[in-house]
Image (spheres, rainbow over the protein chains, first blue to last red):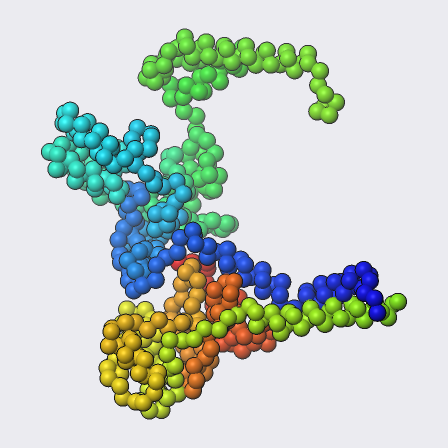
Amino acid sequence: MKVTRRDLLMWSAGAAAGLMVTPVPWKLLDDTSIWSQNWPWIPQPARGPVEVKQTFCTLCPNGCGMRVRMAAGWPVGVAGVSNHPVSRGALCPLGFGAHQLNWHPQRLTAVRHRGSISTWGEAQAAFAKACSEGPVVIIDGYPRRAASSVFETFVQRRAGSYRVVQGSETRAFAPYERWTGVPAAAFGYDLENAQTIVSFGAPLLDGWGTPGRFTRLWAERAAGLTEPQLRMIQVEESLSRTAARARRWVPVVLAPKLHSQLDSRVCFSKSDSYRRTDRCRPSRSPMLQCKLDFQKMRFVSLRGRLLLGLRLWQLRTMTIPRSRR
Amino acid sequence: MRTRNTIVFALGLATALVAGWVIFPRLLYVHRQQPLEFLHKTHAEKSGIADCNECHALREDGTFAGIPTMEKCAGCHSERIGQSKAEATLVNNFIKPEHETPWLVYARQPANVWFSHAIHVKRAGLVCTECHSTYGESDQVRVYEVNRISGYNRDIWGHSMSRLRRASHEGMKMSNCEDCHRRRQVEVGCLGCHQ
């Protein structure tokens, strides 16, 4: 009996239909997805003795408590510490993933000196030369990180000086510290027992303080509730994410001298009527504070207006293809 | 013509069914041998080890000992006490040279899975046979079938290729864990198992 092309097609159709009721396609799909997770270049945690160590996060100055599970000496899992006075068991997303920063694709994998790839020897020589030129002072704008301890140790050995830039919150508490004698660092927030929080621009839901703790508190006591147990009033100039989720947003307008230079430039490109208002009139003082040239900025704005006008004239006069209308 | 088409179609269907249900599983899994022939039943009868916890214990800090180390085996087998070839291999190749036995683990999960025996045994009160069947009473070493593509043991998928009407101890995929949690109405978030 001759096998025809039709026979081949019918046989294939039967086989395809039969294959759908076998585990072949589904099992292959499942197995290949698992296989794709185990390619050799994908980092895998080592297997070995498991131990748990308690430490604190150093990715920001808050120092949330962490419980790190380690396998064969490498951290493989991070959890909060429930009785930690600062974090109360919460961690922010960055803290939860801290142990994976070792494999971040943007991590430094080579020595860099002044932005270019260098060698340890060259970088060390340049660093030693720079340190020999005079006393070493390190001003740490982000204290209490992991790197901060390295800076402190270094200047101690060099008999140098280590200074920190106080955060805005600490600076804000400075007058109170002077008045009461209580160190600013000793202040804490009894958020768990608060019913109403009035925030003057503090990004409560955008990384303020101990983000994990406040976000969890918010989720438990306020988010999505018609009668929240925690009410937040956000006093802020813009409708930030925090303000959008607050019980009430109190918009405020900052004084003109606090406007940024960008706002001033926008004023130049507005209509004449808008430009004439006092609110939009730029004053020299903020620009002087920013060390900007008033005339240069005005020229930039004027140039911008000219360019815009030129472009508009071009659009009016050029032939627009039918397909783009 | 129609009859011929039907017959040819049915032939194709039958071929696919046989290939999918019979040939495919045999091709997919490759058998490996354990380094030793360990018999649970022999140890239970002769050594009086009746409880799984005697060798597969929870440590004081709550972590699970898993497969006992060579040190545990050396507690009885520091020298040969029987006549079996398996014991000779154990003593000569592993205990005396102080080499850990490279057991092939049937229930090995991916690295992103965090499973706590302490929570399931102590808090939930699950018995060993709920997930590990009656392997503790086996009188022969189970064949270790490893998936050629994924690299995991067949116990993870389950011996039934269709995964239908399986017993509670068959299968250790995420869906199996989810089913049991759903039946017992125990909710855990993602971080509960993927810490």
